[in-house]
Length: 445
Ligand SMILES: *Cc1c(COP(=O)(O)O)cnc(C)c1O
Ligand SMILES: [Zn+2]
Image (tube, rainbow, N blue to C red; front, top):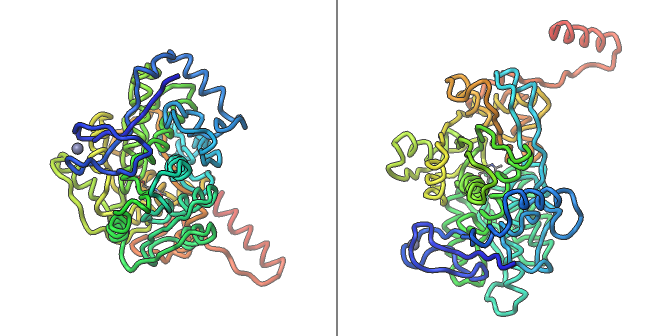
């Protein structure tokens, strides 16, 4: 088995680099790198053999294949030493039939991929297990300059980096925009022992500083401009197809900010196609918050140019990004997948999340953005009633308690909380309690 993978420029410049080298951008043009696999070597197994191998590994405790990411190791980082791998058996998150919500919007075949049901509560675990594993191998080789790993974050990347770093015993440093991440997201890297730097700037400002600080290669940069993370995150699309017994849905909708995840989604699906496992591609929808919508603006202008902007404050704080690093990769993917970019206002995203919650979910605001985008596309007739739709839920709602509380207290800016359900405060009096219950049940009837 001589599977291999290496870094190459996304814009096609000359040059190959080892995945264990500290390099993030093409030295010729400054563009991002991507991990390229020797697909010809991977064709030594036919589609059926691959499908059987991957299916057999789901749910096993056999290291490292019980991870949804490392169960596809040959497609991720094939030559990584299993002993250096840092995994908490991330991935294999549930993909469930959102039947009741689907019926309400007229899409019976609506599914939600629960990427927030993961070790640190977001899909960022999928990419971080790969990045930290590669760094671990580099550091253990004894020849690498790397002493620590750092990232700028809107909250979830830092939680994932801190956890995987702690699992490996690797020092981590996280740069957060002060006051712009949730309390749960702030406490996660603190608990895992990271050096937590809360800077008086926004995410884009943190990104600039972390790039400067990591220039000398002693601190490894863990942001998604580092394409190792993309290799892990690309398993989400593969996993969705696998969960449908290797059938491709018609649509996949996801919230986007820095645009790494949508690039990853496309990359995984294209690999399945190149290996002959699937023959059609789903259409993709990238959903943005109106307050931070550079991709939406570019899309409306036919992707003629990147339209970086100053992101405004949005409830969807993990996608409050004005200058997305993976813009070029994402545009390429959206073009290949006949993609659409849609946006959601604060009012729309908060009410979409609440509406889904009423059907048993517990959506983070970013999932609210994706759902709101879907609702609009269904109303416009773009997504049709008989189509199979998957919405990617990117984080766990429990990380966003103040969003939920604010909604149900109807105190969120620019939001009219249509489904607010505040608690009822009553004296400890059985008669009053019973009357209140009866009134509520009569309303519901
Ligand atoms: C990181 C993140 C996103 C956006 O992913 P990008 O790769 O930055 O586009 C969406 N939702 C949540 C919850 C996230 O943490
Ligand atoms: Zn280049």
